[in-house]
Image (cartoon, rainbow, N blue to C red; front, side):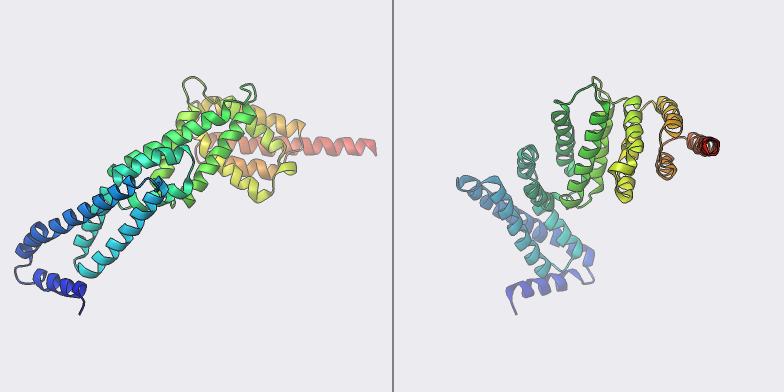
Length: 315
């Protein structure tokens, strides 16, 4: 029998007796606490040696930390039979690296080193939300900083370009959340908070009219620039961002006017118009959507009859 197996059996027989609660308290105080302190000291020495070794860069240090964590977790799972105790010890191990990896995150976000950030996420993932706030704040700052860097060279008189760049930026961030942060809901909420701040920026907000003009050009150009599946996905991104428009009354007014002009003057797809209105129904007044659908039905019918009449007159 190995030493690990002996420890496992010893703890198991010690804990599960008639004096379970009394023994458990003794175990936590005398055994568990010493394990945690010993492991933390082990990690601190290892980490300091890695930091002192000038041949090691930050990414290599993070890689080494992950290897050490996996080794410790494997050993703990073998020798500690109490599930709650195992989780507690492992969480304390991860917590011990929190400050170092958060300092590392700042530069990783700045350089967009997504591979390293994925490794960092694996270290902090087991921590409570309150203990991970720093990495969410750093991601929030990255989203906003990257956006302002992207738009600094854009013509402010080209709202279509600004809105389109925001949608592409939002899409890129969602991809990174999926691939790097494993669809962590807190990262998604952090992204949404950052987009809210971008749309309603005090000095350079994106107005309701800007969004309407972009959607107008999008729906006029649909048949030439988008495959149907791509367009539906694009509609999702647009509608997600539209919920942060504060003045929804103004948006609905501008949208109704643009819709009527599209239906009268352009050969737009009723199918796409309906599809986008369905997306709007998630975040906008239902009556506005119903009125727009009614307008779509009435104007499309009148335009069809008018064209039919003109064709009959020619022949």
